[in-house]
Image (cartoon, rainbow, N blue to C red; front, side, top):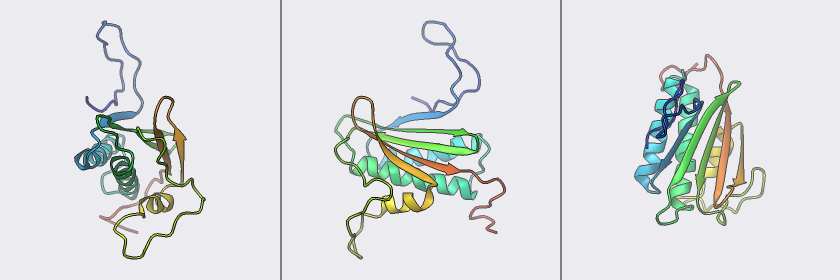
Length: 166
């Protein structure tokens, strides 16, 4: 399957034109490789949408998706099930969503108390990063099975990333 990001209609298997897709939708294997690929393909799609690679917005979106995808692989993995990443830009806001098949294992909601992470622990800080990087985020139930973590990033024109910080 390839990322969906067309600006014109494409024919379906029946020969009828499908409506244009305004966003990015891709499923990945629930493996560390799938999580890496999710981040890379999202950054590629953002560049195609005019969010330059290496810009602050691109770097922030990449980090958010990397954390959410790692969580989907680590905590949301169900053998034989993939996780899904969706993205779209509406009115200057990047909407990101990562869905997995484990609805019973949910991160604490935004603003909810979190269990203390031991100072030398190797994990347990991913959602703290998402909370600090995203302008808004939440955890939603999926229609049939699992959960979706959504995050929004208000895109800021003119911000520079690691290649030219202001």
